[in-house]
Image 1 (cartoon, rainbow, N blue to C red):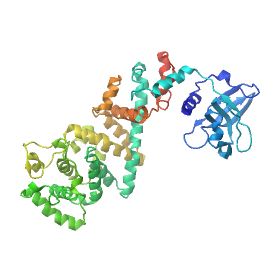
Image 2 (cartoon, rainbow, N blue to C red; image 1 turned 30 degrees about the horizontal axis):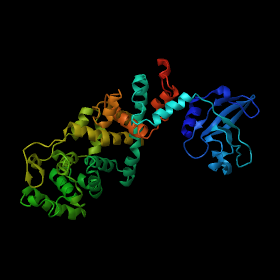
Image 3 (cartoon, one colour; image 1 turned 180 degrees about the vertical axis):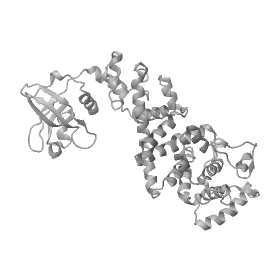
Image 4 (cartoon, helix red, strand yellow; image 1 turned 45 degrees about the vertical axis):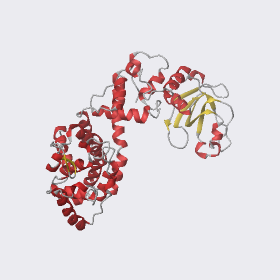
Length: 440
């Protein structure tokens, strides 16, 4: 048995209160289980219990066996001297705190159907352990949990965003530029795109916002794609030669150091996703006077926001995918699917974190509204949930389902998941519909 299961029983009162007695046979009444502590120290702070008319306030420590109190070194730790109750599954030894006082130890009594349900979920072979039962629960319960998870997912991205914000000297435009550039890599080229954004600061690009060709020059040159020998067939290409000439001037002016051109990956990518095409599209986005992030913050409608990021590569790329090789003539637009990916993974999280950082609830709410108005993602994770009977209505819910699957289902945190927690609390049988509402 895992200790976390006993934590769960104690937290939600899923034990038999009629079998709690002290060493003298006095009934123990739990007034409050305490505040769950996930850090060092006792498992529950500020609990309140009553014994023979006397109320005690203090901490509660929980172990599968009472001897674990000594095994974990708590008997020498003054932080455990205020433990008023030691809750265990097996009382195999008397234990004492660092003052030499014996701990009041009780064996928790519970319905073993709860443990059987817990075991069946935690050791289920499927990633979504409750996939056969989740559809039996009230949809309000599920949606309530998903609403919390989408906030959790956005907040989980705040550390990365705020780290970049700090690295850029608290410059939101630079931060946004780096994150946007990062997601242009579509996983395969994430690393070189990140390196490019670091090597070519946005403050330099901003000086050339009115000249798209110069922005392309800065991007292609600093990306190392103008290195001699990288695109041998492009040496007779006028556009390619013009880029090289222009970059010699700009790189000298700003002391730019290109990254290595061999870092970019082209294999196993659809031509439309080649980094050459993506860099030209990025240039189109960045050639916006006043700053891209400033424009984003002004937009309140999802349709307007999409238009900012639905761009087309420059004319040269109409009949090219790489330098020097002509292809069938077709305009290279970012496309609605790619735009949604940018919005979901980069743009909206930055808007949300910006709102949190500025303590502006309106901006945070706007970010959530944007998610609600974007089509749900279609990937292997959302397909798993669809098979389990849960279909995402929008990107708001697909993001929540991704968070649920990756951070709870995959890690078997069923006790921390409101859905898993509720299913375990019901044991083998589903209760009446009115009992299916999940506690926050």
